[in-house]
Amino acid sequence: MTSNPLVSKLEHGATLRDEDRAQLEKLCEPMVEVSARKSIIEEGDEPDDVHLVMQGLGCRYNLLENGNRSITALLFPGDFCNLHVAILGQMDHGIATLAPSHIVKIPRTTIEDLMNNPRIVRALWWATLVDEGTMRAWLVSAGRQADRQMAHLFCELLARLEAVGLATEGTFDFPVTQEDLGDMLGASIVHVNKTLKALREKGLVLFDGKRVTLPDPTKLAEFAEFDPLYLHLENAALKKPSRPRRVSSGSRAE
Amino acid sequence: MTSNPLVSKLEHGATLRDEDRAQLEKLCEPMVEVSARKSIIEEGDEPDDVHLVMQGLGCRYNLLENGNRSITALLFPGDFCNLHVAILGQMDHGIATLAPSHIVKIPRTTIEDLMNNPRIVRALWWATLVDEGTMRAWLVSAGRQADRQMAHLFCELLARLEAVGLATEGTFDFPVTQEDLGDMLGASIVHVNKTLKALREKGLVLFDGKRVTLPDPTKLAEFAEFDPLYLHLENAALKKPSRPRRVSSGSRAE
DNA sequence: CGCGTCCTTGAGCTTGGTCAAGGTCTGTGG
DNA sequence: CCACAGACCTTGACCAAGCTCAAGGACGCG
Image 1 (cartoon, rainbow over the protein chains, first blue to last red):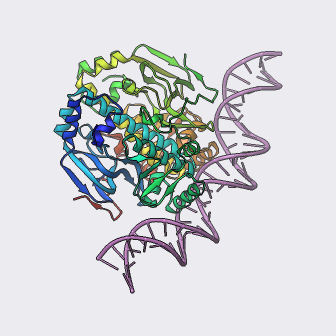
Image 2: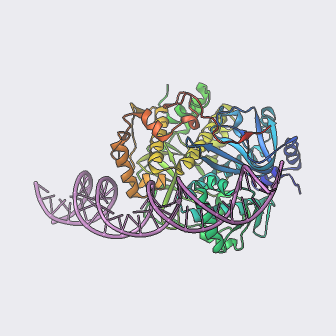
Image 3: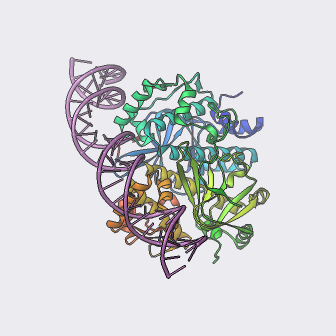
């Protein structure tokens, strides 16, 4: 058993040996402390190092011309900010902290060394695909009403954080402002406030700006139409018994 | 010069040798013809083969419980449907055709062979990252008004299709219904119709269900706040001269 | 104690959804 | 060749979700 968030996350997607764990743990220092609401990488940057969140909470974001910020992903402990540094030049989005965090900067060459270990390559590829699935789920969710969308987000957070031991009994730390939440959902701060109130009155979500409590996760998942398949976790919270089948009249190729 | 869409796409992201091109071209047969609106892979499937679009138009989609379909990506010639088959088990989304298409099915083992060629691995990784950037751009776009969002989509299509020689002079084939367009934008069919009318009256977009004409791409890009950075193409259409800088009061780490 | 940041709520307006009706186009069978 | 059906497009009327503006309250920190 390890307390390293990178290792415990990757164990969900790949089979690692002790030597792999040691190699991964060696990556995770030295850590830099970054306070809340700091920019780490900006759109257009060409960073030399790969950044990894070890503690706290970061996000991917894009700024719009009207000054709005769109948050496209949350980065929890064990999540990489820019693993692709060696392939793409400029960043097409920014990275910032939402809460006080510990970040590691890993030189590009160290990452290239990792690529010689096929089990680690596989694990990192798995993590990338989960990130992609998560973004897809956000995109689908963005087309729905704000209350469902917000409920879906909280379900996802519970499932993700439970998988790395950061949530128990339907509660977890989530120190963000309502404005941050609005940037995640593409909603105004006023509407976030009213939506939170509605979910609270339904007994689905309690949130005080620091911590989230979900009194009845199953009921919340039903309300949100949440299905954790996209997280590709073995024993995900809120897992559905069976897959929904096609509704429309379309027919299958061949 | 090749007419193979996979090769000409990957040349934008990696440097290939003749032997690499030959190896890639060998993948691309035999092709299967699939008519429009057919399901190719469904959510929950565990496909054995990797599917690649060679001609036509496909999409990634998710079905919601109310029967709505959310299209999360468009698959043009040269795009893989499920390159990750070896890493993830179940599909967390479906793949379908929108237009009549030619599809290749590549056995998993052939893909594993490809992974021994580092230039091809790099090229495929680049393609995956571009897909990811594209999805991120859709997510950001989803938070904006339908007319801007639609304009953004048409700008993206122009840039992507120009890069593979499928668009000239601001016009390209795009045989989808307004309902399909609604599924891409998360908008109702009625609103799609009215939005198309508004863009037409502004002289920005002409679309007849088969073909798109953009009379003034620069003006459209300005309206859409389109920036092709996320496509990571060397000589992208509609490229902006400089990157926008941070507006908010946030400060940088360190 | 005072200021800044964040939360809360109401009022009015805009965007976009739903419903309904009719129009166009195309392929098929008489 | 025409009639018809089905799929898709178009438009108007009305309603609901969500945005902006505005004002005030709670809380924490220097």
